Amino acid sequence: MKKPFQLAVKRMFDIVFSLVVLIVLIPLFLVLAALIVKEDGRPVFFKQQRSGKDDFYFKMYKFRSMKIKQTSNSKSQGRIYDWQNGVPDDFVFKIGSVDNPNVTRIGKFIRKYSLDELPQLINVLKGDMSIVGPRPEIIEITRCYNIEQKKRLIVKPGITGWAQANGRSEMNHGEKIKYDLYYVDHFSLWLDIKVFIKTVFQVVGGKGSF
Image (tube, rainbow, N blue to C red; front, side, top):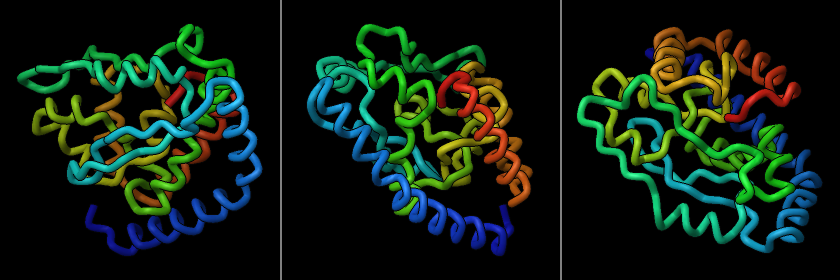
């Protein structure tokens, strides 16, 4: 990752892109917020602690897609992971199917097209995240990382990454780590462009979720 010029360009792009898109999407944000409140009240956003660059914790934003009661329960009854030698390769983190009865009607729609991820542009503007990078993992899982898995924390997490562009939520942890470490080892602005383009096609097709 000793590419200061490319990293500087990447950060500049993150700032300009996230700021412009946030301004352009203000009407969409207002519509989605209104639909969420109308169906299930407030809050509009779901906030959760995630592991960022160098395992620095930050609060990640998403549009709330789960019912309020279920969201509260998930916060108080978080899963406990106690793996001793790293996260198993066959582990798959279940975020919940769009058919889950605890997902709101508007939640099903925004999950399918990853619109629930749009508030993370705020995280990008703040510098917690980048447009492209390994997806930010929950702290309970990163605490179990082995030395090799921790390498994915060398870079800023992203709204989308090499793993998501090649499969999104359909792969297990071992496959995701391989893609993430490939990104860390082969980082370039050209790779970021490839990830961005592939992600657009994934989202337009409504395939999987981040």
